[in-house]
Amino acid sequence: MAKLQTTYLGLSMQSPLIVSSSGLNSSVDRIKKYQDYGAGAIVLKSLFEEQILHEVNHLEKYSDYTEASDYLKHYVSANNVNEYVNLIRNVKQEVNIPVIASINCISDSQWLSFASRIQEAGADAFEINIFYLPLDPKRKAEEYEHIYSSIAEKLQKIITIPIAYKLGPCFTNPLNVVENLRYRGAKGVVLFNRFFEPDIDIHAMKVVPADIFSNPSDIRHTLRWVAIASHLIPDLDISASTGVHDGEAMVKMLLAGAKSVQVCSAIYRNGPKHIEVMLNTLTDWMNQKGYKSICDFRGKLNVGSIPDPTQYERSQFMKYFSNYE
Ligand SMILES: Cc1cc2nc3c(=O)[nH]c(=O)nc-3n(C[C@H](O)[C@H](O)[C@H](O)COP(=O)(O)O)c2cc1C
Image (cartoon, rainbow, N blue to C red; front, side):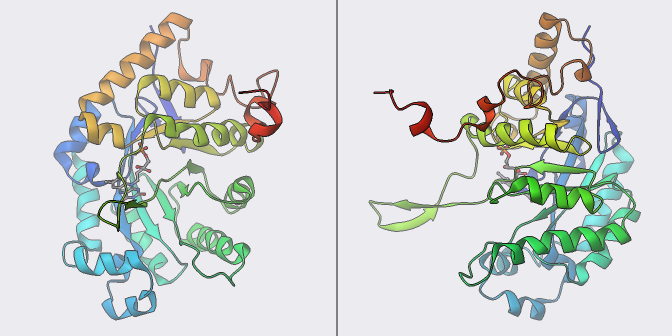
């Protein structure tokens, strides 16, 4: 019989499925349900750097930063560090699965000193979600990327629980960003975050929010980079995120070398029981293939384990499909 137990960031988990950071994880009752359906861990909804600072005046410096003004309108009154700390304490009292705290940040400012309060509340690990939309044409990519290294360097001096960094999908060299984080003490990376995106309604002639949920085909970008990074940076745990909607997608990510997979849109769409459905697919597949544990097959199809790694490295349609008509 297949066993789904595994580890991520050194934490023992009953399965490799993690419920992603989002409003899905904002109450103890829901998190208990995810545990009962077999989730290996949960990542709490993000506490925003701006919430931690809790100084509305301080936000003036972000006045051109749209998410900060959204936060001012909707978030500041309802959330703060104390609530977050209490949520961690309450969840830890009620569930046995690892509870990963999440901070969404855009700088290496004094918010870092509050991170230890979250650690003291009993979080098992941190997931740090860094994203700064690069809107200044004169600012070099390396200046933006320096924010990542600087946060990791400073956080590492304060925090003793494992830290994973949740990265966006767009870097010139994602492996270099991942390697820099590993060098600065990261135990894992989440590849990749998916951001709120705009769309255009051509009939109403206005800019509108795009669908907030992902689609199953969105796994492909993540699949490529999990397969490459798990081979080239093997001592870092990778959690695969974006587009994991069913058990088959979870199997693919594990074969590509992920230590865990994160699921968000599919749980929003199908409800918590979908966790059990996905895990049943994983168990059935393992039984069919004769795998007894996750480590029997994890990474079996990453870049270093297949005869033709160019399958992951091919990028130009013109070069490989020029006869396709
Ligand atoms: C409604 C909603 C809220 C989210 N909130 C957060 C958040 O607070 N922090 C975070 O790091 N990611 C957040 N995310 C991103 C998800 O954690 C996840 O990375 C992303 O949706 C990709 O996974 P999926 O394809 O399974 O949806 C949110 C996503 C959605 C749809």
